[in-house]
Length: 124
Image (cartoon, rainbow, N blue to C red; front, side, top):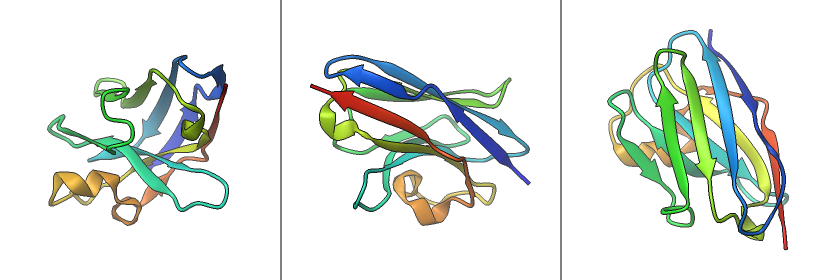
C-alpha cells in the first residue's frame, strides 16, 4: 500500500512561486500532480514516469516543473509565474501498474493512489 503526503501549498500573489512536495511510502511507478478547483473536474497538471520522462498540461507548460528525487521517493512541483486561475486543491498521485503512454500521466483514472491534497491560492 502506498501512502502519499503533500506539503507546500499556500497563498501567493500573481506572478509568485510555490513548490509542492509529495513524500511517498511504498513502491511507485509513475507519479503526477492533479488539481481541482471548486465546481470543476480534476485535471492533470504534470507527471513523471519511472524513466524520468515528463508530461504537462498546456495551461502550465513553461511555468511548472515536475521532478522527483528517487533516492527519497519525493515528488516535487515547482510552480512559477502563478496566475489566479491556478487556484485549486492540488493532489499528488501515484500508480504501481505501469503506464502505456506518456499522455496517461495527465489522466486521473490511471492512478490508484492519492494524497489528501494541498490548497494553492493565487490572488491578484
